[in-house]
Image (cartoon, rainbow, N blue to C red; front, side, top):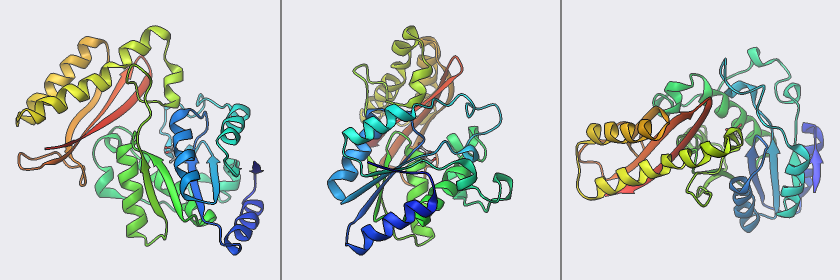
Length: 282
Ligand code: PAF
């Protein structure tokens, strides 16, 4: 597996790939890789000749007081995992390589409509940071396809809209969430959890499934369902950031006539913030 630290080196190799007709599949990550990321690599492997992953803990998408400084860094094992899934190359730029003009002097990309609820409300500026780095990575690497996890449902919808709205010729592909046996969505932030917290965290997916069942049984009082789920989560020992029944495309609060839904939730367990979602088709 090739390791690139500079944009120049990366772009020279990718130009050669493109000249020889290879399709490039991009898997952007922040490292500390787990099966969730590796499922993205597997999906890219099936659909592209050159699979490129990126590992970059993007300071622009972290707010004050968030876990930027403590974000887990496991570069050597990340390389091993990527190589074991036949990734062809990995780009590991420094902050100055990605933001040569400084982070406070960076043109920003935003998708305001889809960013105004859910994580966008709790983490102001987060999705601008995500959109900015993803569009930079798209422009640097010009992949044919790019792969993102469905666990970050709002992020995936925002990246899809950004790509369409800005006419970026990249096909954005969502890959299903990988889960532990208890149902907990795989996330690098699960590493922050103590053993006893792991089983508590599994209640997040339980609450989503329970609410989905009630919706499927014909319950239409969405606010009451959200409150019930909130109570369930609080009783289980989780602090609710949000639990929202939303339209799956607009991400706006769902109305009684909507049938294409997503339930999006974020909770705190101690200092650890966990997110998850479930699609519901009525
Ligand atoms: O989902 C992530 O890991 C990050 O938000 C991403 C897409 C790699 C951008 O930094």
